[in-house]
Image (tube, rainbow, N blue to C red; front, top):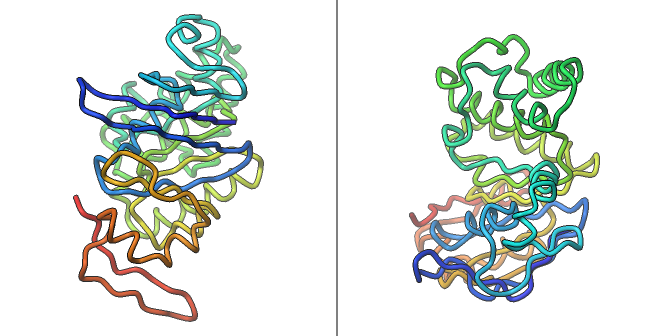
Length: 262
C-alpha cells in the first residue's frame, strides 16, 4: 500500500528524511520508533500527502504521489479520504465548535447525504464510547477525550489506512490500553495502520513489525518487534533509551523501564 524508494526530505536545507526505503503491505500494522526529531512525523506527513519528497519516489497503492498528482483536486481528495492522519496533538486537528460538526466535517467534504452523515457520526461516536458528546466543545474535553474525537473524525471517512503520530502521548494507562486494543480491532477488520510511539511496553501488542529511526534521519532497523526490543544495544545507540534502565519480568512478560531521550 505504501512504497518509498530512496526518499529524502528537508526543511530549509535541514534534513528530516535521508534515503528512506520502506514498504507497508495492505492490512499490515507497523510501529515506528525513534528519538524525538528523528523524522517519524515528517515521514507520516509525507505518506499522507501533506508534503512530497525532495528526491526519490513515493507510491500509494501503486500511484505515484508528487506535486503534479496532488495538484489534481480529485486525486488529492481521494488520497486524503483513503489515508487518515491523526496528529500528535489533537488541538492541532480539532477546529469545530462541537463534537458533532468535528466528526461530520470529513463526510460532508465527501459530499455525502445528510442522513448518511448523521449515521456515520452516530456510529463512529458509539464505536469510541462518545455518545452524548455531540454538542460538547472539543476544547473543553480531557486529553484522552480529545484524542478519541480526533480519531472519530478520521474514522468517519472510513479510510483504508490510518496513520497515527504518537497517539499514546499524554494518555493515562487505562486510555492507553483502550487505544492499543482498539487499534488491534481496526487491524483485524483489514485496516492498514502506521503508528509511532515511545511506549515500548505496548509495541509488541500493537504490531508484529517495527521500524526504528536513528538521529541521522535514516532507518536503523526494520524487523519483527520482538527482535528489535531485545536489541538493547541498538536502542541505546539511537538514543531511544538512556543508559540507566532495566528490564524486568512480570508473569513471564518482559517490561521496559526506559526513559525516552527528548
